[in-house]
Length: 375
Image 1 (cartoon, rainbow, N blue to C red):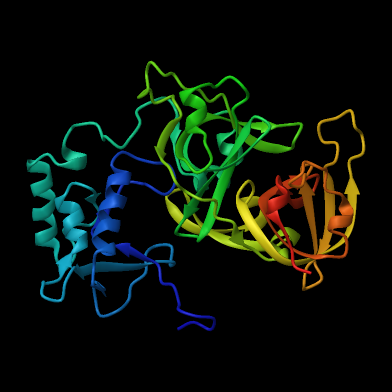
Image 2 (cartoon, rainbow, N blue to C red; image 1 turned 135 degrees about the vertical axis):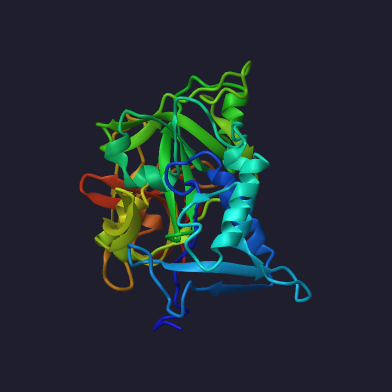
């Protein structure tokens, strides 16, 4: 046990190298990830074995090199997952012969090649899109915005909100335990099936160009399309599932006040820890904060603009940190505009999206139901 709970140890397979599925998506990467997850989720017992009597680390020093043994019932023998991944054609060799199970590893690899399975089938991966977009994860996109600026990209996520011709999409990353998101501008060109794909709660594959939006000072995806006559076109947005809910991950006020976090990333083929501003990483994802006291409020009073009635609530957290809440014009059940008096000097819980105004991060609120008054 670590000082604050169970210690998390990161590991890397010995003898194999699976295609990428957590950054840029490679052919058969999703298949390898799915195969691994299914085996381990069904396991009743998992044993990690080192190559020698010592727990050896990889070249980064951040992960242990292991053999993974598992079984799915107490009456079954343990199976070696490293070997099964090789045998199913879901990995390439990585010092495959030079280890304690080298002979068996080579036999498993040769079997996959002779039977033309997976990576060695010579066939296209049915889970991979062979279009002109760079296939990646929301995490990879958010961590490397400048690198992908102006590039056509494709990523998956859950539609959590819609606002002014845009939708917000977020995806959970199990490695970091964070949600990564992106705002997608769809304008008003989509109709019918295209619009239904972007319904809140749908899991989607987004395809579009990453662009820096000068007016808002943020990045967004634009240029999305849906051709109903060619539903399988890799340039189409696509619905992958439905019935999902926004995360509304609970955060502290420190996230909006300069908190830093270290994330493991690949640089020139080597894993390194890089420090990021937490709020910057969580941009456009759904979060919740609790026990904020509303100290003051500023309201947009120009009736000639769409944001008439929108307001900024300046709040204080329990640890005396400032939190800025930006709301759309809020209306009660009768349709009447909710005034600042409803919130001033009250203690509230909020749920919304992390956004940015100028140099400050804030929580964006779109509905009066996203604010709960506690006293």
